[in-house]
Image 1 (spheres, rainbow, N blue to C red):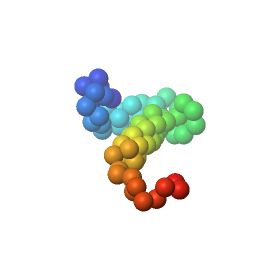
Image 2 (image 1 turned 90 degrees about the vertical axis):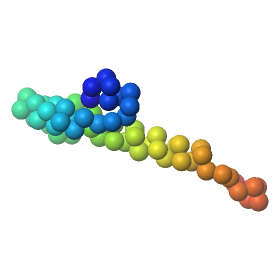
Image 3 (image 1 turned 120 degrees about the horizontal axis):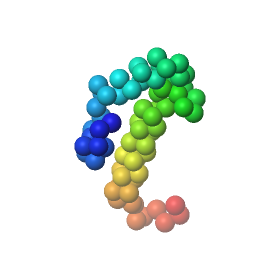
Length: 68
């Protein structure tokens, strides 16, 4: 992902595709620690978790439920 897209949070799918295909051509596996899809899956999970935590922190808590 280019530096501009990193700061805006946008994904350059063409660059992503190029990186994955070149990794596959180099003989890297799709998964595992240094797999071709590992950076994409990492970015996807981080974005999902970031969205979850933002949603959780912005939600109003119910004041009537004092046990939780």
